Image (cartoon, rainbow, N blue to C red; front, top):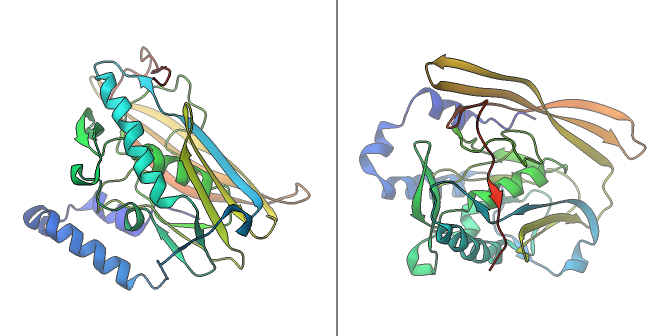
Length: 283
């Protein structure tokens, strides 16, 4: 289950000169073409909780952290952005043969639609950008999906490691970045069961869950292997790992040990001296 897809490997190997020259209109057209030709139904129905009552996977992540050199207002704006985005996804049901596309449901996170300037990562540096902060949602979706029988068919890794591990609760590089409309997160249901997505903004955390109409028969342990930090030049460090997951049956017997993805990212902090972000309460 290597979710490091061909499109990502091609992007890393060779930038698209056409996309660079034609800009946003071309990127939107290319994404629209991909949606039309992906071979799976993208029209998902929204149903109540009792449609899929069986718990499968859940996760939560703290929304507000004190980031050095970042205006705290951008963090508060991120919560607004997350509320808008989760409202478009909450309650969607992924039936057998269907595919969930993050951007097809969330849409363009523009100011016209109520999105505010939040923190975005540009060339490894944090700055303000309208709709910033939605990567926290795709991170959560990707992590939860790795604990289900659903298949991640498009996922883009983060190119930079910006935050040290202090307070980290999941393996390095287990998330998924996003950028409208080029970098999408897409999940396909290749099982015989239906899955319902629940996502929302809680008092302090972004919260999510996958539930199903059938009790799960597989359980998963996602872990990292082959972790390595290299000093490529004075002050330049690259972090690498392999993300894997163990598959267990309902009796706890290990069935498989699958490859999830190969990751590498340029580090934007000293690997020895870096300090982690600090949680701050919601207003």
